[in-house]
Amino acid sequence: SAGGVPGDAVHARVWTQLQRRVADCVEGIDSHTSVTVLVRFDGPTGMVQRIRSRGIFAEPPIGPCLEQAVTGIRVPPFSAASWDTSFSFPIAPPRWRPPQ
Image (cartoon, rainbow, N blue to C red; front, side):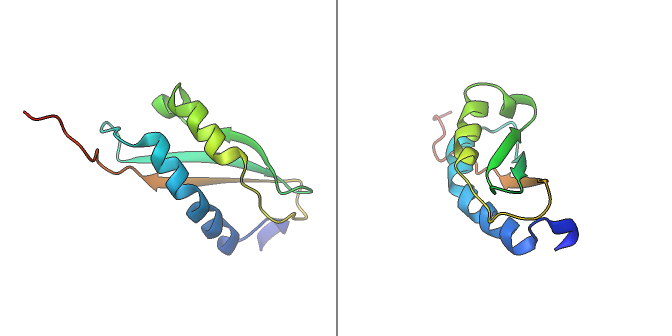
């Protein structure tokens, strides 16, 4: 992988691990069709160092929910000091709509 950071296979695995957790945080938001979470992983440990999102996704209650969803994720340690990457997820429409 380029520059000692994890490659596409690791990214894809983390995306899959996060998908359900993130979906639970953003379910029912109909103002956006997707959410992007920027994550920095620490090289020596493979642990999450920082999580960022924008707009309503950075504010409570969604921001803390996303932070909790992502914090426990780990990747195998890698040689670079850190890895900044982003994960984008579609937001499903609300499962229930109030009757008109």
